[in-house]
Length: 296
Image 1 (cartoon, rainbow, N blue to C red):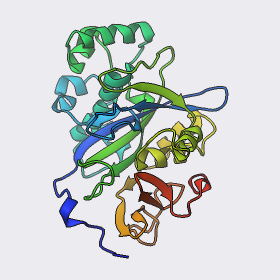
Image 2 (spheres, one colour):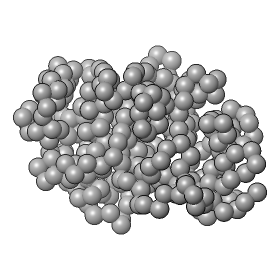
Image 3 (spheres, rainbow, N blue to C red):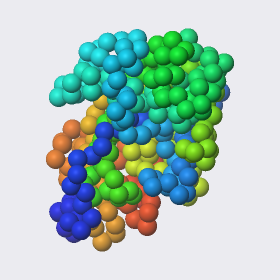
């Protein structure tokens, strides 16, 4: 077994692209659910996989007028993100990116006082070609930062397991706004389905759906909570962990180690669940080969 996590032939030495993802949650009779989009099979990133709404940071996300539409100043958003090395403006732009991407991909709009009728109006303006900031200005809306909480930060290894590009993604969690309905954009996704966190992992284990490690591990973490309120309260009470997987090539496949694992440089665990996953034949599994490792 090689202890060198790098593979020079396929390493991506470019800085990872800043990105943001919004994990939308809703309470249901059988427990709370998470919205998962199915990427088109021809997509260049995670083709056919189930993902949370999200994407890379756009230049527009740091526009002064758009940042001013948040119901909290950039300094407050910066403090909540827990990344002192970032400028407050850059931190606030990540919040904007998460809201914008969720709106573009699902039609859900985290803005003050927006019900389904208002969200539908915003979607219509977007279809007419208006940019996100222009939609917000036209409707006079304020972005609702209070409804979302930073959850975690995932940085793609220099040798990605499933895609060619690297991303530095901040994950946020938010409750589905009352009255709004998630409607996927056909140009962005094939389907949008609500699933319980554990149900989604069980379906992945059965080979029914595909997912990347950050989605799987996030769902495993969320499966510990009884409802949306408990998950949101947990997010608000801690600093979002930074997760930089350390990959190692083994005879069985690629081994991804996470903080707290003996082979990871960070000794403190960042999240519950297994501290290492084996990637073989295009699928992730705990090294033990047991699905229960995600929920122990």
